[in-house]
Structures are given as structure tokens and as C-alpha cells.
Image (cartoon, rainbow, N blue to C red; front, side, top):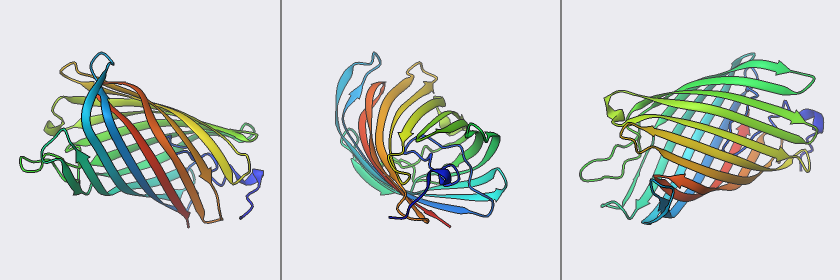
Length: 265
């Protein structure tokens, strides 16, 4: 096992989590390549009064690629590609479909860094481009949101001895006529990790999102993520874990397993 020291962690992006963005940007000229696999299942849903409802099987496997490049000091360029999604939904006919998803392009800027407290504050802005497969009369299950969104996010991260915490707050603004009744999504995440060893970090997260719908059928979901982040070598980072939705409104009761492998160049 490659031995990362405690002093290496801030520069080594030791704050990385599964479902919460981390604030430290990639260094100038550096490249991170991230491959993520997700497996989601649901047998239940929540109604408009937060009550349990039955539903047919929902199952989705996703394969995503992310690239992060340090343009210059404190600036990071990000590209996210949904390579493929395999979706099964017994509530819709035909009930299975496969295809590529949407693309996200963005910039991350470090706003503030306190070296004494090892505290980072970052702002990111991105655009989601509807490059994915759309639903149709013959194939109702699409893999695209089918409209553009402008995404804003504020991210704070701090290292405290062996502990790390990260909080983010974001809003996705839908654009264009294809947004229909969608009026935006507000989400926030809080993650806490503890480095048992410099290369071994168990972590837990609280994840919340609210969808604003014009017809008054807003949706909410509150989820908990449990995971572990490993640094097996100078060039690799591995994240393993799962996210469990614990409460919601007008949304599916999902459980998602995550495998995230990151290569540093």
C-alpha cells in the first residue's frame, strides 16, 4: 500500500466524497479522470403527502465519465459524460431501454483558502446539455432530461486533524420550452469523513433535493450515503458505498450502490 502522509491529504484531495462535491480544485496542468458506476433499485415510492406507495420495479445501471483539468491556479475545467444507462421501469411500457445520457460542462473557482485552518470555499458553474436519448411514443424510457440547465454550486471543505467535512449548496435552473412544468432543483449535501489511515477514509453523507414543479406537485427526497474512500497509490483513488433514500414526496424510494475510480495524471 502506497503510504500517504497526513500532511499530503489537502493537496491529495483527501476530502473526496461519493455524493457531495469537494472544494479543493485540481492543480494547474493536472488531470483527474473519473469513472463511476451506479446501480439503482426501487420497489416503492412516496406520494404527495410523504406517504408510502407501491410501484413496479425500477432498476437502472449507469456508467459515467468525468474529466477535471487544472487550467491555472485556483481554476478547474470539468466535463461530465453519461456514457450509458440501462433502465428498467415496470410502470412504463415498453419497460426497458438503454442509451447515452446528457453532458455537463463547467468551471470551478477557488474563492477563499485559509491555510491555517485548511479551509476551502469554491464556486462552480456548469451547463447540462441534453445530448442523451429522448423518450418517444415507441420507447417511453428516455435517458435525457431533454432540456438545458444552468447549474450553480457553492462548496466548502475543511480538514480538522483526521476529520474532513464538506458542504455544498446548488441550484439547477431549467431552460427552454422542453422544460415543461420543471422550474428548477435545489439541493444540498453534508459529508463527514474520518481518516483511520491517510489512505483509508470511511464517510457518511446527508443528501437532500427539492424539485420545483409549476403544477404544485413539488418533489423532495432525503437520503443518507455510507461509503469509504481509498487511496491505494499515487495515481489512483477508489470510492465505494451506497445511498439510501429515507424520506420523500412525489419521488421513488431508491437505493443506489456506487463504485467510483479516479486516476490522477
